[in-house]
Amino acid sequence: MEELKYVRLRGLYKKRETEMSVLSENDPAVAEAVIKPGIVHFYFCAEGAAEFKFAPHYSRHLNAQTNYFFFQPEGTLKFTIETHVPTKIVALDIPLAELHHLFVDENLPIFEKNGSQKYYEERAVPSSVMIVLNQILQTQLPDGAAKLYYQGKTYELLSLYFARAKSDAEVCPFVQSEETLRKLKFAREYLLKNILDPPNMKDLAKLSGLNDFQLKTGFKEYYGSTVYGYLIDHRLELGRHLLDSGNMQVNEVATEIG
Image 1 (spheres, rainbow, N blue to C red):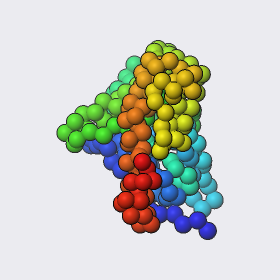
Image 2 (tube, rainbow, N blue to C red):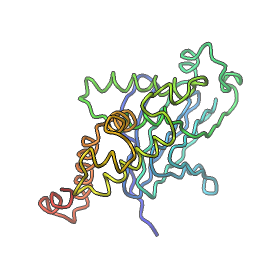
Image 3 (cartoon, rainbow, N blue to C red):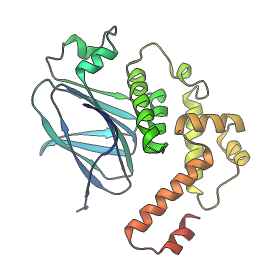
Image 4 (tube, rainbow, N blue to C red):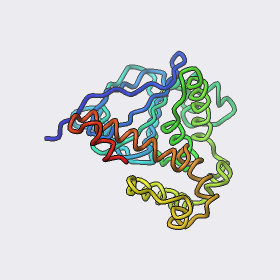
């Protein structure tokens, strides 16, 4: 039987009952969570997949680029989040009253019920929201700047999530189609598969079917980092994971990640 390590969601931002946190795990893991009364809970799966277990015989599966949106007016509901493949999830909690204040002129389904009934929704995450999720997951800032940054990302995430009129192309002019996104994802995957001998920018753009400008700008918009900045961050994360495993020495890790 697969052994799961117990982890906690890592907090990024909190102001009273509004809170943003992340779950980023490469190994099989389980985290405890709770649905609180009067709080709207969002779970965005940027990569991998997770199992939300609410009871011994009831669970729901969350795949990459999908999200759950929970609300219940009374009582608390404890559950666990299990991951069995490398997974990255951004969680956002906000009181219904605060959400209503932000979208006072919007006709949102949850407001129609006036907060008196349970509400649940599952939907695909559009590329405009994926861009923000990747920026949240990739950006590293000192504590003083981080609070303001994640507060801004909280409102940006909510506004894009509930946007009805804007298309993805309007939100991000450099990521204009699913075809462009496919090419950017190919560039990322190729880069990570060749982590010890990465291609130069010109060759990577050619392999991906993009020009240099499209690759540089689109990658920055979608993944929140430059191409080689992303590669360096991935190397450092991989190195930390290998050292934490206790099976390799520092010099061996350095050789492994280049």
